[in-house]
Structure formats: C-alpha cells, structure tokens
Image (cartoon, rainbow, N blue to C red):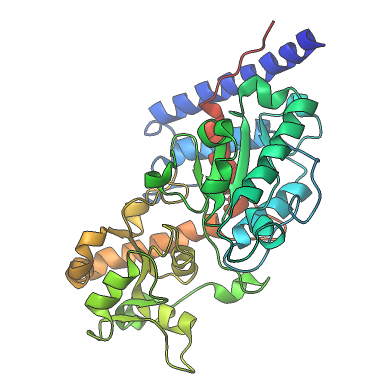
Length: 394
C-alpha cells in the first residue's frame, strides 16, 4: 500500500516540477513573447509584476491543480461560513470550494493540497463563551480535528502539514492556527489578518482580501465616475479603534475640506456615494491590519491609500500594488495631503484606470468566474504549493 501511495506522490510532484519549469521559462522570456491567447482575459500592463508569467502560471494551475477537501467535521463549525458581513471572504470561499468541480478532487492521492474546511467565525459563534477571553476551546477543537485527520489519513503526517491549508478572515485566525505547531509553521495559512509582526510569513502564507458583503448582489457596489467628477481629494469614515485610526482622526478629523475624515457620517449621507466622489479612499488598519475599505475602494474606482506598516497586501506576488494604490506609513499620516496632492492629474487618471483593470481579481461571483477573487486565492495557494517539494517514503 505504501509503495503505491509513493508512486502517486511522485507523479504529483513530477507534474509540479514541470509546471515550475514552464513558469520559470515564462519569467525569463516575458519580454520576448507575445501575450498568451485566452478566451476570457489576457493579463497585460503595469498592474502586474509580470503579466506574462502570471498568465502562464494561471493556465498551468487550471490544467493541473487539484484540491482535496476533508469531509470530516459537521456544520456549522466545518463546511460552513458567513456569506455576508465583514467576514464573508471566509464563508464564500468555503462554499465555493465545496461546490468546485474542476480543481477539487475526491481522491486524496491525486491532491496537490488539502483543505481544512473549518470556519473560525462559526467557532467563535458556536464554541466561544462571550466575554470570557478564553480562546482555548477554539484551539482545542482544531487540535482535535487535526488529530482525527492525521490518524485516519497519511497525508498530514507525510508532509507535517506543508501541503495543507486553512482559511480565516476572523481577527483570531492566526491565534487559532497556533493550536498545532505544524499548522502555524508549515501549513499555508490564508488569512485576512496578514500581519508580519504576528508571524504571517509571505513566502508560505496567503493574504486574503477582506470583503464586507452586505447583500448577495455585488454589482450595486461596483463602478464610479471619472477623476473630473471626484471633487474630494481623500475620504475616510470609521470607528476610532486600533493603533492607527486615532492618529488619523487626531490629525485630520474635521480639519480640511480636501481630506474629509470623520468617525460617523451625518444622517442621510451615503458612505458609498462619498467614496464615489473621492479621488483617494483612505484605508487605515483597525484593530488588525486588514481593512475592507481596500476592496470597497477598488469596487468604486477610488484609488486606495493603505495606511499601516505590517500589512501584506492580497495577491502581492502577482499584482503591482504601487501602480494602482498609495502606501502611506503610519508616521507619515500628518503628511497625507502633501503626499496625495503630489500625484499629478495625469498620473491619477492612469492609477484610476488601473484600479478598474484590477477590479476583476477582487470580484465575488456566484458561481465563481475565471480570474475572480476565488480563483486568485486558489492561485496564491498554488504558488505556495509550488515552493514545497514532498518525497515519498520507502
């Protein structure tokens, strides 16, 4: 039995080795080849770090990549998640992965990665004792789950979790992942809370976009006017919490008509409409580094201004964020207006056009469509799996 498993593992690894060679060749020859053909979309232009290599990698993923979803575990803690709210990225991915046909395999011996389909949001709702500040029951639930899987199957122990991934948009996702040392240190952790100061490792972990879905119809949150119809230089409205926002509010709240910063908008004023009238949308970290405002800004064609020091932006191994966003260090909050006013009208028009281009990679579709946020998350996982080489044991 073990020999047969090893043969299949070597076959899986051989396919990945061939994909690595194809992608490396694409990186080397990006300037010597015309864009690849594609019936849906051809990535080109400065929004990508290397558009040709990304496209080649994406096509290799579609051709080869297989994900096994463990069937153990009962809803709602497993195989379920929130599909609305600030944590919707978690539930939407779990649901889409459960429904996936093309890249999901029912045979674990054909899998390149193994998905642990638990929801930290549902754990908090079902297991956590409110106001207890005791997260140990959550960690114990996950530790017990991994014990079950590692006893029943050989795959976790074979790789010490390196070809397994978890996904969480809850602030506590990183902490819950510490339930198992291999999960924290070896596995691919797909996290909204992508904070390098708290152990997020960009070479193996994946930054998950935080998307606050209020309804199932995303199209209502998409689109915006041109630069000439955006009279406000910069805008932010939100709660005074975390280490960054108090600084932003102290320096800018109610002090400048061009930089409109407030905690709460007046009754009757539409948050989305003000974003649509703003050139730049400020996206400061809250209690944790991620902000749903980044994707909100992209949806509404407002150039995002990311304010925070330790946040790894989503898909940043593929996307060239400086081409369509502004990054401002916390120490530079007093200089916000100077920094943004220095962006020339021509440069701003280019950036806004690029925001519109990159938006497809953050769109939530039901069912998912090629190059959308679901497939970009999978592509990020695919890239990290390419970095892992497993070897069959005799």
